[in-house]
Length: 348
Ligand SMILES: O=C(O)CCC(=O)C(=O)O
Ligand SMILES: [Fe+2]
Image 1 (cartoon, protein in one colour):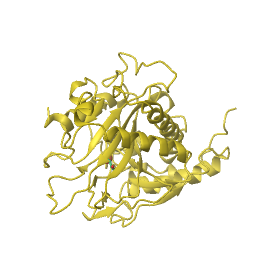
Image 2 (cartoon, helix red, strand yellow):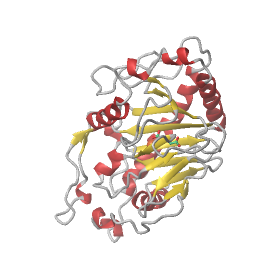
Image 3 (tube, protein in one colour):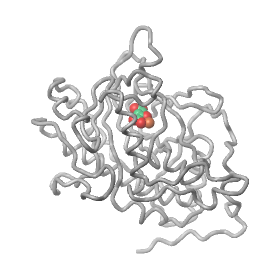
Image 4 (cartoon, helix red, strand yellow):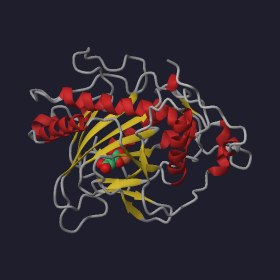
């Protein structure tokens, strides 16, 4: 059944060009807002509109928000994290057999210091496992079809680690489903038709990473962090983090704000694709992770972008003579690929 569309209220302030709203109203945010998404599937357009307004504020001012009462089941998360722990506990040679540098499409394992998100740093102190879209267990093994874009191609899986692929893919698909629910809300937040991103997200360009951060003890070299200061590359990221504090978000005053782990929530942050679509009305906020807790930390980001052949072009409502387009037009695939190449270049 067609959901009733949100009817634009002609007197709504959203009729104003969005670029007027680009200045952060609270440039020195000290906290990351928490958004209750239990009504994300509501059939009532006014309820979806209210949610979009809340998310719009977070997107303009912070670029980060927590979601609570999200639809990813706890047991799906638990099984994926257990699988992740088993993967990182494998021997170095078992993991290196699927090293990401052997892959032509950025899939597989990244060892400690294998990645460098901040070019001024010396490498990131985490291990990772990257995968892209693939049918759930039971489906075929194909990844995106050839020709679907810069990063098409199959995933690589560790040999002999039973019970790994299924829970990881189960979580991937659950997070993807949440992302599919969020796109219409972001569209509403941008005063666009709710289905605006539907034909731009037909071949899920969603990369997921299992991440493991060993604790950093002693004197911490600021050039070797869990993950160096960076922005994400896609439209938005859905991040599950465990209860170990490490993630920090940079506010406009140059202060690192802790993204404190809140049980039962996920962190959603915007990436560069949305910044480009919106000419920086939506903020792709710099963040990093530093694990000084003394214990190991695990997280799972899923980066959801538009199809790789979609052009990232500023929305008309976000450009004006007084606020010209800041970014050259590129395809989503070329943009993400160029950022990934730079990230892994130092350890080639
Ligand atoms: O692990 C985290 O909390 C953040 C990871 C992250 O920022 C990334 O992978 O882009
Ligand atoms: Fe990130």
